[in-house]
Amino acid sequence: MSAVTFELIKTDSRTKARRGRVTTAHGVIETPIFMPVGTAATVKGMRPEEVKELGAQIILSNTYHLYLRPGHDIVREAGGLHKFMNWDKPILTDSGGFQVFSLGAMRKITEEGVHFRSHIDGSKHMISPEKSIEIQHSLGSDIMMAFDECAPYPADRRYVKDSLERTTRWLKRCKEYHEQYCSLHGGESQILGEGVNQSLFGIMQGGVYKDYRKQSAEEIVELDLPGYAIGGLSVGEPKEIMYDVMDECVDYLPKNKPRYLMGVGSPDCLFEGVERGVDMFDCVLPTRIARHGMAMTSHGKVNIKNAKYERDFTPLDSECDCYTCRNYSKAYLRHLFKSNELLSAMLMSNHNLHFLVKTMTNIRKAIDEDRFLEYKKEFFEAYGEF
Image 1 (cartoon, helix red, strand yellow):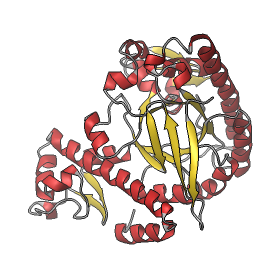
Image 2 (tube, rainbow, N blue to C red):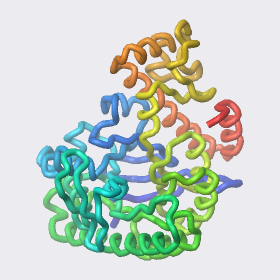
Image 3 (cartoon, one colour):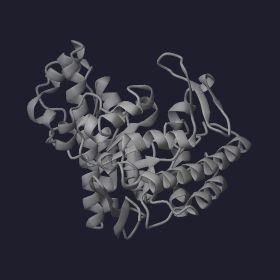
Image 4 (cartoon, one colour):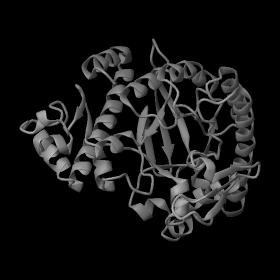
């Protein structure tokens, strides 16, 4: 029986949008959901307590980064990632595939795995499908992502076909390694959430080629995993192309399993993904733009660097009830940013994450009430240009 289960609660009557519930060893996740990214076992600029207070149900951490620093053996010795970072809710770990493939000339892909040099000190490493799952076992995440090859954009059909077929072969190796580990060690390390308390999700690849997307989906669905992700989108292609590919991607995946669109988190993409039947999203966007003085609000983006906010003593968003908006003005936030104070990024990150988490809460409510399209229209009209 899978450690992660999914319950489909309701489907919107006019779109593919749906309400669901993912159950894990560390709690229940109401979907559709946005997952804040805690790359190196921390959501940048946020204490775990704050992340919980703003309503986040699950966070994502990065296998590649935690493998290099501090090392998965250290995290395991600490009792797993949940204890190490003081987070008692669900955690999803990506496989490290995207980060490794992003190294460009610093890596070499073979059938065995990927040989690469660390971006930190240039040291040589190799991550294979088995190694990725071994690392994720040590981290003790609730949801582990399969080690895949993320084809760049643009890429020709030959490259993409070879890439997706290698991803399928690697997924089979990930599954076999995980199942063997659970069979041999499943009952010994449950305090870490290791092994039997973890579930493996497969990743669909295929670039922007719909026939390859279909091929990839058919191959990975055959393995009957607890959940599936759509990978290889939002990697540089225009949004119109991404949405066109997404139109069919979800149809190739099972209705009774969670669907996860990797690396997507701008408000417009969240709505478009939900409308097409996606359940889970993640992105570094809210904290990254916060560090550059940008906020997402119910009336569009606010660039706190602008001189017009120097004497603006109103909150970032008059309709927001986050900690930042309840306590601080645009003028103060601008002052912090211009003074290079750490508190600037902290307060802006708090607001941006709260904004996306609250937006997803409102989306779930709209689906429950069968008014998703109305809410989407209201949101887009108020937000303006994305």
